[in-house]
Image 1 (tube, helix red, strand yellow):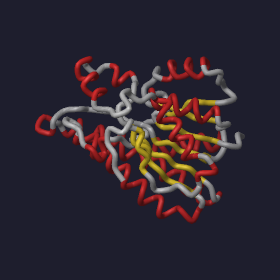
Image 2 (tube, rainbow, N blue to C red):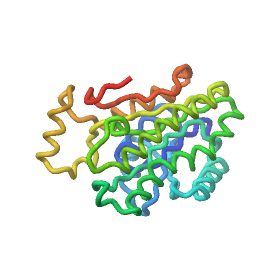
Image 3 (cartoon, rainbow, N blue to C red):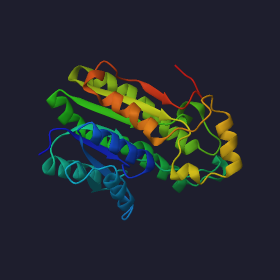
Image 4 (cartoon, rainbow, N blue to C red):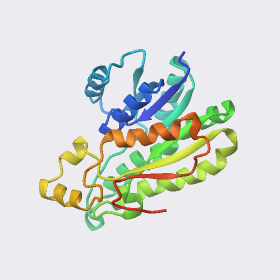
Length: 249
């Protein structure tokens, strides 16, 4: 059994992988959740390239949009590795289209994966964290939760819901030694954003005060700060990691 266990949902994606590496380097045994068979291969290669192996990390196949599948995954992790101390809810997809053309399937797919998954997984770890008097939960939201974005009514709604979830749960568990925070990335260089048309990409970059896109490591650094034992007085926050493109209180 490991002493410090961190679960990262959607952990094999670009941001998720950076979070996994950063947490492993902080001494956590990291479990990366994924849902598409085969998507874990690139993650495993990146972890190896970072000098991390079986003593540092593992993978867990589960659809976190499903409550029972999430519960089984958590139970398996507890039985195999130990109790989860850190949960990073990072699972997310996009189905961008204007509302006038959006299908119910496109709406529900994003809500289920991006928002309902946060409930599905957190519900299965929160009692254990409260019972042990320590826990760190970080939910990955988005700048578009508060800024909005054309063609993303589904995505922005889910990410805004994450912020409300974060603030409310933070109030419920603050006295139990459990903190709950959100991180809202802006434009981050990932495989997803690399597919953006070059002229649109340059237009986006021109609007960022820092003059550059963010990196997955920028997001991971924010997560590392929030999960630290020394950050126990920080809870209910929504930390912007967006290069100043959208500033809010």
